[in-house]
Amino acid sequence: MKSLAFVAISYAALVSVASADSLPNPQDRVVLSLQHEGWVTTSSANVDAFFNITQQRETASELKIQILASLEKLAPKANWYITATRVNKDNTGLNRWYVSATARVAEEAVSALNNRAEDASRSGFKVSIGHVDFSPTLQETNALKADLRSKIYAEAAQEAERLSKAISGAKYHVQTVDFLSTSTDNPRHQQMLMRSKNMAVQEMSSDSGGRQQASAQMPVSKKHVLSANVILSRVSE
Image (tube, one colour):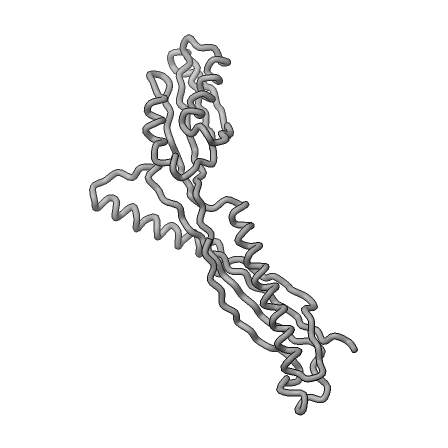
């Protein structure tokens, strides 16, 4: 996880703070606007797996065991969760099973998923890999946000100390920190930007004559920006 930081500081005060000589009664409060940004990159992906099964001689219990065993072979170290099941009768009177599952799969195991799905498939038992999403996990994202908050806290404390030194006889402390946002773009703009990037990748793949593989993807870094309004308050003597 790499972090970049920049600080935009604006002082809002009723009286200009210049020096102790020009300001006999220093302003009680000073407002700062602080901002830091950072990137989070994951090492795993959300993977969807699908089953299209024609029930023949197997019982329902046997099919469930086979489905779970197939998931285990796809990614042995992953925790798979069944997200949907549906059973319909086809024109021949046989039960057709449609099952979907999802798991967080380590990057090194993603590239082999399609081949393992083919190996797990047989006549009447089709296993396929669907969406592969390398977006960071909530835990990874929260870790970055916590790091950005720590940077803002430290910056606010430094500004309070700097202000106290600039104004002789006055001591300031951090009164409040009001966090504003964690993104520079609105969700709709982010979706449009991501869609345009995906289209560009698909066009390059099409021009090369290759077929895109769901498991042939790379981790995607995501930028977060955290802003905060900080109030520095003069300590009463």
